[in-house]
Length: 89
Image (cartoon, rainbow, N blue to C red; front, side, top):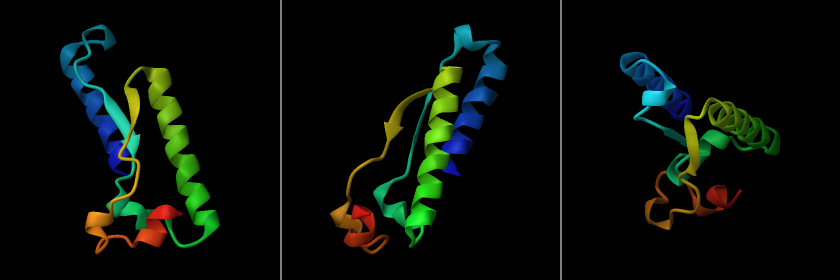
């Protein structure tokens, strides 16, 4: 949801600046490790969200607004939000 909102923000910013030539804002697509519970508990749920992120990233790249993957990796300092084993999935 946050990645989708970020892309909408870029489009809103463009509407204020006139066009893509004057673009001043870009976006990333990703999920912070502490939010990894969003991937669900089954392989099917994980695959579904992964595919949604990939589609969003591809669309954003084609539009010239997604420039990187954001927030990848493991976060062992905040395991109260998402356990290590879930992060590794």
